Length: 90
Image (cartoon, rainbow, N blue to C red):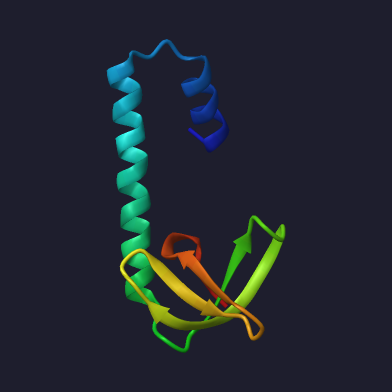
């Protein structure tokens, strides 16, 4: 099953509130695991990239700080606080 089929099944499905809550909890758990994995794989000084929703483009920079929820990325002209699950090593 691909992501399109999953989205269609959720939107057109006849799920109860408890079932939808279970789906949301599973997505939150998966996102948390991805964040933890990314935080373990990056270090201060690494080059990373992420897709900016504000600029609509990919931004590349260097990791300056790794906090509990966010990673501070220095792009050379500004600092971005980015969720770790959005980062990819460049």
